[in-house]
Image (cartoon, rainbow over all chains, first blue to last red; front, side):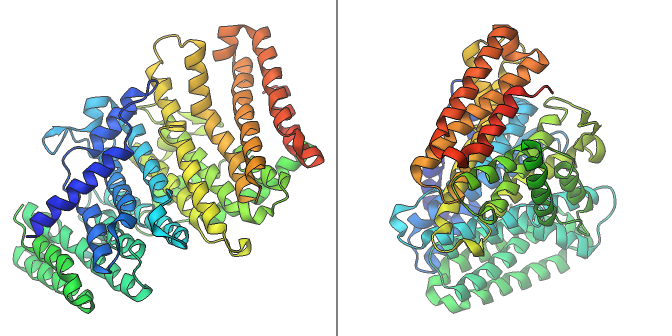
Length: 277
Length: 277
């Protein structure tokens, strides 16, 4: 059931994303091709789907959130392109296909990442005619907290901390810092953006944000269990499983106030806890 | 006289910039140091000074524009850090000091550039309490046109076109495309942002933007004359000089409507035309 929800929403997102990504440009052809290649490459669209689900949970119209959802996926894509570069993880393959720099060269991949991050902020700032008065102020707040979540105080800071501890064995506190920042921050702010731009009141947005923070952590713990890395290595698989179940419970608790309207978000959390790959 | 204006305004900008750049962070120390190193390194602050001058030209309060001015300088700094990377120009020195990646490593320099671009958008979206109602809408418009000017349709596109023509000899049309996008777009949008956030009306912002576009081109032509590159090579130094004088005249014409209020911007254009290094 939740798979059907993902299929339906990700089709909507893919269509909107394609509309934001120009096919080509006479003078900078490879750049545009590399941007498209990085974004339109079969990702699961977890972050934008979360944004749309959070919007619906507060009773909002997804049209208000769809541009921001696309922006969040562009940010995710840029972070993967830069992460894969030789000076970072030096990965040659992603989802079974050559990484962006293998296909287009390091220089073009670097620029494509920069351009996707920049385009994301442009899309966040585009007028949303259907949204009515006062929406500009909400959009501006979203620009602010998304930039905070994916910049030095968030995602980029997590990557930097990860690099700093690459050679040593990080302790649990460091591991949590890295996870919360490197991958958790973008997931949490996707939920926050969906609830905020969907028109949720301050208290609802706050609780949904905490759901998103728990969900971000849950993703990472389950990843670690499946890859026998990080948490699973440090705590042992049984203890990591227990931790995952507890974090999932925390996520569900935060959205209890939504009642039936929280069903989709609850199903997503359970799906993340139970996934096998 | 214009030198004194630059000294005064750039001191204001340096102080504000330092305030936006945290000194350090326990888990990501090098990242924060690299960000600071890239920004606080004796740049001339041309772009933010232009933003403040354009604000004053339309009778605006510089406090409304100072955050955006800092954001524009962060964007300029990020572009230099990424441009200097080994996969791009592979430069070892900038302003007589080791480039960011030489000092902090390629991975940290890449992330510092990413974090500066992201911080720029956060700063553009910060509330400006002194600015009053309706300013959020103007800020959102600024996020939009700045992202356009420095993304794939602007600065990054210019860099991509530059790379694409590195091995061949670009013709005049390609050279102009590269110049207008790679360096001109950020200069033009700095003037535009200053006038727009300073409260200028639509017609004034439009003419100031065109002044900025001419000024951006003028910068590049004079650079080329001084370096005996690009325009100067293609047109010959005498013809390039004539072209520079004409472009400067166009810039001055656009701000004629400002009368005495345009004196600083006019002095900047003349200064750029006559500079010897």
